[in-house]
Length: 183
Length: 199
Image (cartoon, rainbow over the protein chains, first blue to last red):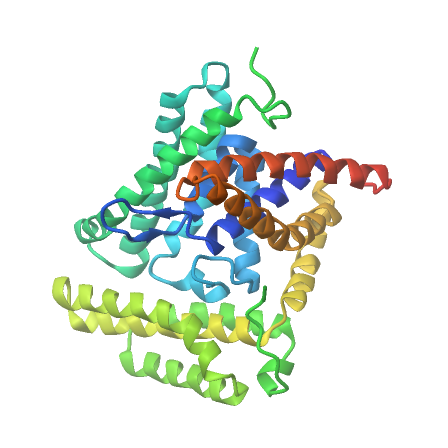
């Protein structure tokens, strides 16, 4: 890993932290503010690729575990990893890795629709699978109940996918893009 | 911006060495899985609460972290009471509450810098696999250093876009912040290399 890779990993971990400080999105119609941190997961994967994106989220979660209040609402510490919903947190680095891997594979023909599909797969399907599997396995909640309980969060996450995908496509024109320039 | 949950103090819990606190958390995590007796688990939770009193932490700081976690637990208990059985719900809630309590106690009584040095110690064996622990320490230090800087960037970009009437558009903030971050990453990397830091 070059020095630049290390700095990119650190700065995108910091972006994820900053997204927890400011609610970037408000759900249309309902006015419910949505924590924007999974936006950090999608951005890290879409811009840094699999390895750097995944590591960036690992760094972020370790800092949370060490006691920095970086999760939305100023939460942090070892306790959040013992909760009923900790599976969602553990899914973040894997999701960033998957989004990054798929983005790298599709980089030559990257467009808005591919970006949306990739971020839905990583940012919604994988994160929910991890979160729900944790609730079922560790907390003993029946599968169907865990599924229904997660549904209200889908609209916010769909909105985040739209924002992340649009940003990722717009940023592809950036000269010094970490994934390089497609031929 | 206060970037730590640590509450200074001189209690025995504060003075206990960080490694022992971490070992305690780990042991508690295993212990709660070994029993299904609500009585034993309640005794464990009582012991954790006793440690909180011993640590003399400000109640506000404890509640600020604990309330959101316990609100989820309350919902969780309700789900179990309705869909499985209140007995199972009680056992699981006691387990979670005990471990969450231990984690909270560790976080509130331990400086981030102390946790960091334990982490660095744990990373040292990685050198055998050709991974330089100094690189990992640099990444953590950079992240902590740049959270307030990026928060500033975020606020100034948001102010600029509000002046243009784009304050409610998340893309108008996210894209410039990301570009600035990518540029900044290149400058930082150049600065580190220009200073001849060998990584």
